[in-house]
Amino acid sequence: MKTMYLFALYTVFATLMGCQVEPMLVEPSNPLFTKAEESAEVTYEIHLHHTALTYTLADLEARKKALQLEIENGNDEAIPQLEEVQQEINTSEEYLNFTWEMIGVLPVPPPPKPIPCDYPEQMNCPVPTPKSRVATFQEQGADGFSFSIVSEEGEVLYNTTDFDSCENDGQCYTMEYPEAGNYYFVVEKFFEPAGQTIQYQLRIEID
Figure: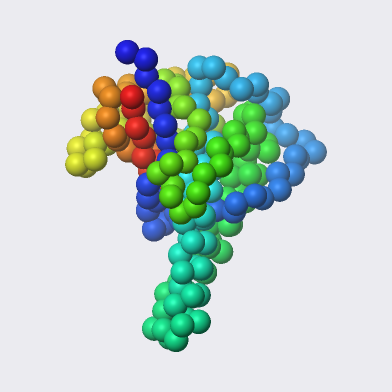
């Protein structure tokens, strides 16, 4: 069966919300590694994280506009909600900037550009197909990573914390995808800007 994976952000845990829609990527003068070409066999976790943050910020911005409209229409009770959303946006932008910095110094190509779609209809936003091997790097704190495939009902169908070495001092995790259906791709890792282990997830549709 020909398998195609369409990814779109479904939700991100409260500890890891947000991003910046079109940040500038500044290439460092002394990158840590030689840049890799786009791989036909490896998906880079930093790209998945970047995508999750990008779509999360778009959702937050949509929520912000809706709350601003409520306040303009006289609903002052929405003010605390707006303040909370703005704080989440600020945190999200900080997190996305960090992923841009890491992409600038790690041996990975730039993240693929998202296919245009209507916000906040995130379920219609496809992102790059993940390969059977997902790569992370020690400079990102790769120790402690885990990847899971979870059903819509919350059942963990596949989980891995085992890795082997891949080029440029990376760590590669081999994924096993289930049969056709709707699932969640869950990533757990230590994230330096948050100062703790965080978890994010992307909804996947396997045909």
